[in-house]
Image (cartoon, rainbow, N blue to C red; front, side):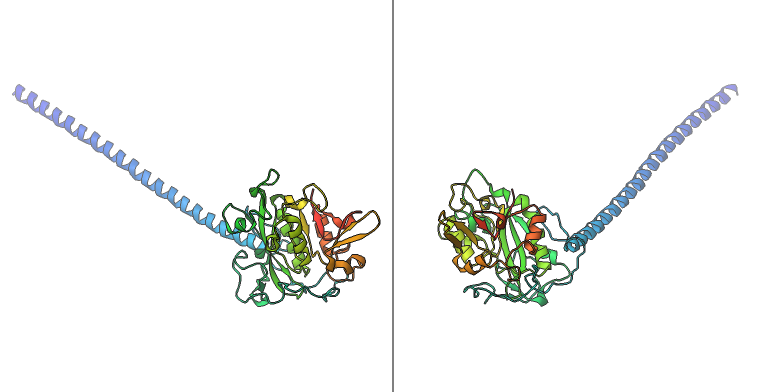
Length: 352
């Protein structure tokens, strides 16, 4: 009897051990499952937060893009400047196209219009321009197709890359292999302006990257003030084989331009134009004057002679110290050639 009890006790003890072991295993399993479940819940929460962050980021990005578009123009670096100087707003009241110097007159006078002016017979764009780099320089944008709520979109800067269309236009012409200015130090600009017919016209210019933002700002402000510029093309469109004579062809056609790797006229020194740091604005109405020792005056272009002797501010497109161009360029640190003693270069603004 005693042995039987002992065996039963022994059997019960084994059963208890087995049950305890099973209970332990079950507990461990439940803990593991709980950990896994908590991990999944936590992961889903993290994913949810990530998704919320992504959505918020995208929303903020779209908002920033919209604000950037409304606030100003895009540059190649993605920076922006105010669409209207001093306001930072995306809207403005379109100015009446005129030469808004001290006279404010919009009627051109002086020498007759030059033949071949791109303001005459230029292709007119009647559909909205989504990318200012797409239309050809010289094309006119119909007022109905122009986005007056966001003028900054029409003032933009782009790098020049070896092999691209701009590079192919300028290489071996205005751009020469040299030790002074590299290709990546230049920027290709697209800007609109009012031509002498009061139409909105597409312009282009190459400048030094250091002044690209300032130039875009100045010309955008000139546009918003209704300032007239006859045309704005790369000097390569006038290429004759060398920089000096090509510059003469450009200014004779009253073309506003900046970059051309060449020497300064009548010197063996590089021009500021060679570094993309000088702009000639409406050169026929603002000619370049040199003087011989005997007092003989040489005027370039010759067609600008009437403007050499009459620099009154009431003449359209004449740059004086009360002119908007002079005021804006001066505010941005440019020097005016009209202040020089000899030569005198009324069309010329340059940065040191």
